[in-house]
Image 1: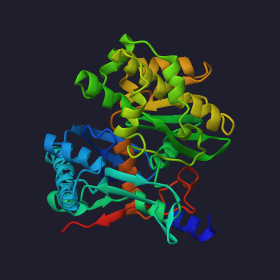
Image 2: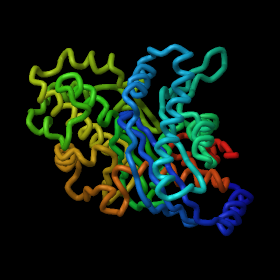
Image 3: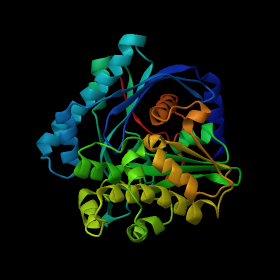
Length: 385
């Protein structure tokens, strides 16, 4: 970092004020919009005042999944961008009606496609990302300044646009692997030994949820009960762990584009017969891929004392049991709740912090995590009238 930029940040920090921010997040599972009303303080700590899960209307969620599968026309996708924006506004207005308008709304949006690969077409880069949930709609329907589109700037500066929650993790934790388990699993490593780094360890709940809906008609495996009732197929598990993604070196990100319905249907061709065994083995895949990622990419580079689990996976008792089995015994296994941070709303809190920093022009990516060539201010501002 140059002296001028360092001096600018110090000067800005002296002028910071506490702000009330609504952080909005919808992940790869697309189960609901997480909305967290937060106080964000000048020391970059965040206090959650209240969080809510706002469920998408069924027809909107259905269209989002069609978009994931490239089954929407351009016209329908255009319309969906505004529909999702209205859903994000509705989630915000539930909090606004109870607590009044915040200073800022900070929206991650709904990722539809993420392509973090260094591929060129006639010397033009195809690396890209696409989130919907039109910020102009959010701003107009809430009357609040809205910050959105965080990932694009990181990609424009050579990064992968993810993981972005690393910025919050490095403010809030020490000597830990901070592991989020949503649809996709991602880790941030914060250690005294090195710069923070992070990457997507692989699938989280995405394949479990798909198979729960396919075989049991349920959206997810509540508390890991179905997995607990099955047996892990070690043969199938080892086959799944041979996927090349798990061997690729960070920085790296993945998503639905990779672990797609086609991918899942292909691996099911060699799955065990019992449906409970399928769920048990896919749950083991999430846990074992996390453990192996640490062995390959974390332990050789950083000292950590603790693994901190967040996201929906923290509520899966069987998954937590497997993580304890696969991780070294000297590592403490905790959840975000042990640090006073909601497992459910941690990412909404993180995006509240990212939006706060955008507002004050504080660089808020972590190049050692995303691979960007410099530290930059992420996010676009939509002003309210």
